[in-house]
Image (cartoon, rainbow, N blue to C red):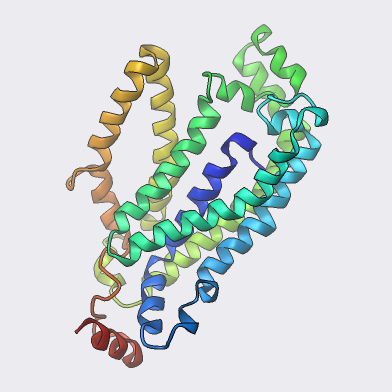
Length: 304
């Protein structure tokens, strides 16, 4: 349901966010399967990965293909003005790339969570959503938001003739926006409910009480702001710097500012991340005393 140029970024970010939300469950999954042979270690047996793939294939792909068929101009950011201008490879890329991108994002974040680098798994989400919002806000030529808010090829061609407000109002009253609203309620609603559910589920597992520093409602709000709000603000800031200083100065300056905000151990983003209670230890670390005996036994046998 998103424009083709940004779709793969969204798929990767969504997959990484699913893995991060289920980080504690994935660690317990590894502990349980550590001594049960190769069959149970199959990637296909991982229920969280399977549900992520199902989400991408059943919700993201069909809604995206519908929007591409209904409005090929908007779906291609007005690179094509109709069905005749849509290369068949775009359709193949969308249909096959979305599930693949979601799986790659999930696996990348899962590997980082399992080795105790949960914060770097979080940065996978930030990076993916930054590229998504950067494409929609700035695009490849500075007209990303104009392309997004132009529901049709004629609207895109007539964009300079009217104000941004009027163009935005035309988009909000268009059939394209109505389709996005309906599909967004299903796709984004399912995504958020699942991610929040997995995050809350993880807080009931061993070690959660000592990792989560704030109330659950506040922790969910912080997580949402960090995964979705921060990349959006970053995309807007990067676009503004590029417009003011040009790409040669604006992008390096933004990279330095982003590095200062994200990478130091005492950065505000790291401190907020530490409040949420996503695991930061290696999956082989011993479970606390409240762990199930079978799980703890596997852990102690494997980590000794």
